[in-house]
Image (cartoon, rainbow, N blue to C red; front, side, top):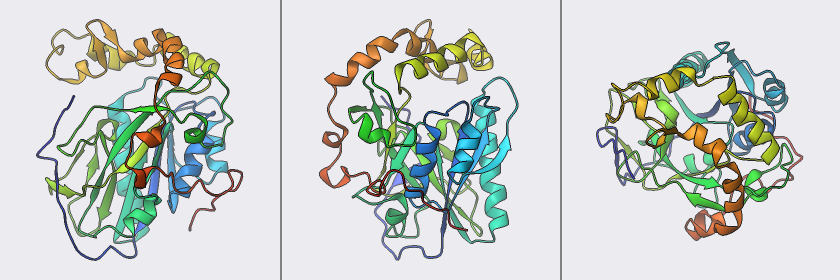
Length: 321
């Protein structure tokens, strides 16, 4: 399955020296992610991020406090009740533009993730270690995503979910000819046309497009399901409080159905949005765990190491100034 954007990016083998003197910043947009946020922020620092920025969608649990305790910086709070992808994207791009401009740096790599996404570099490297060897003429790196299926056991906040739930399947959707689901590692260059992240961090835009991307990819582990009770309660609340009202309004608009527009996003069956399907199929999802291979069997042997987490899991990486 693919939704290719050949005008956005092209795969190219480029040579040249790696970029020196860059910063690596992480970005998270979150709502009530207290069970996973500590591990998520920790992973970004373990991957070499100098700073991690947070937009909190008015969480009413400890998400923001837990993230900040791990070293994340609160960029803003989005108080709107309803979730809209367009608002998330707007705030992500605003953060990238404002923070990069204030940094005084010539080059800033930005790693955009959701709280349930855990990226690392290829070849047993952290994201920073990978970028330190990447030719400096690349400004975007694609991601291959593994969808992890949990068992029914508990998850200890702050620990590595990849170790806790190691079974997975690859996400088959591609948004570029190289087969990447996401393009969530983008670089700000002060003297080059800006890059703008897009919906879901799947796509991006720039006056410089099409941009070259390397054949190598980030490996991203996705954990939309964790401990059953926590996952079920969160899904029920999202749907019962109608937090997706505006997204579902577009989805139900007959004028948009079948045209590949915003209204079709998330449609997995004729009359079923993927959020409703996730709640309906929750028990089936947990039973899926034992049928899937270990994630290390789904990637080349050299990529089957999640760099960064070799350190003791109770240690904290102090963010760079």
